[in-house]
Image (cartoon, rainbow, N blue to C red):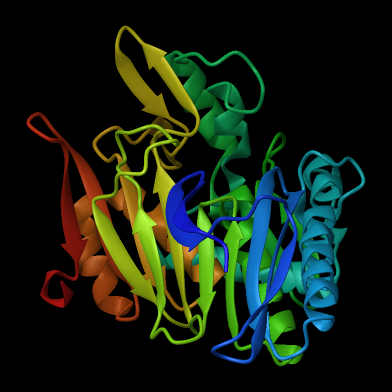
Amino acid sequence: MPLMKFLNCGTLCLTLLLISDSIFCSVVEESGLAYHHSSRVSMASTYSLDIYGPDEKELPLIAEAAFDEVDRIDQLMSIYKTGSPVSIINRNASSQPVPVETELFKFFQTCLKYSNESGGAFDITIQPLMKLWGFYGGQRKIPQQQQIRHILQRVGYEKLVLDPNFQTVYFQETGMAVDLGGIGKGYAVDRVVALLKENQIRRALINAGGSTLFALGAPPGQKAWSIKIRDPRLTHNSEQSPVTVQLRNQCLSISGNYEQVLIVEGNRYSHIMDPREGYPIRDVLSVAVITSSGVKGDVMDNILFVKGVHKSKQFLKEHPDVKAYFFLPNSEKGWKMIVLPSDSR
C-alpha cells in the first residue's frame, strides 16, 4: 500500500493515501477489495474519487462515468458556457419566461425553498452583486453605497418566478441573473454518490475541490473516513488542523473567507455576501457543515455563514441533521471555534 500522509485538497486537509499520479489502482489484500483513485478538473475545481470495490477492472470505468456526470452538470449549470441552459436563462428570462428541462426546473425549486427557509440568506440571484464587487473576473473594489442600492433592485429570490404548469423561469427585473455556483458542486457530488450506489459501490470518498466532500461508507477495516478541517488562518499548504471529523454516509461542506478576497487598507472583504444587504460577511472566517447531502451542505454552510452564530442557533432547530463548526476571529489565537448544536460536541 502507498505511504500515508496528509493530502492538501484546497479548503480541506484529508487523511488519504499518497498517490503519485492522478490515477491509481491496487488491491487491498486484507479486505479482498480493489482500491482506485482518480481525478478530473471540472466546474473550475479538481474532483477526486477514492473508491473500493470487488472488481479491479470495473473501478476505473465507474470513476470515469462519475466524472462524466460532473461534466454534464457543469454543462447544465455553468454561467461561463454561453450555450448552457443557465446562461440562456440569464440572457433571456428578463424579457420572457424561459422553458427549462425538468431536472433544472426542480433544482430551481429547491433553491427557492432554501431561500424562503433562510429569509433570503441564501439567494441564487446574487450574480449582479458579485459582479459589482469584482468577484467575476473584474477589478475587485468596494462599491459606493448608491451603487449597491441600485444593484440590489436586481437581486432577490422573490423576483424569480417559476411556473410549474409551463416549467418556465422568469425574472421580474431587467438585469437579473442567477449563479448556481454556491450549490452546483453539492448537486454534482450527490449525483456521483447516486451513480456509485447504482454500481454497487459502498465505500468511496468524493471530493469536489476541497469545498464539498461526501464519505460513502468507510474504508476497509475502519468505522468512518477521518477528515481534517484546516486552520482557517493558514495557507492551503499547511497540514495543521483544528479538528478532525469522522464521516460515514455524510457530507462535509465548507465556506471560507480565504478563497476570493478583496483587501483594502488591511481590511478583508470575502466573496461571501449577505444578498439582502449587499456587503460581504466580515465577522466569520469559515463555516464547516456536516449533513446528509451535498446540496444541503452547500446551502447550509452559506446560510450559516451569513446568519452568524446567534441567528444560526434558532435556524438549526429546524435542521436537526446539521452539525456546524464556526471559526470566528480571535485576537489571541487568530480564531475560535464554536460548534452548533453545542450539546453535540
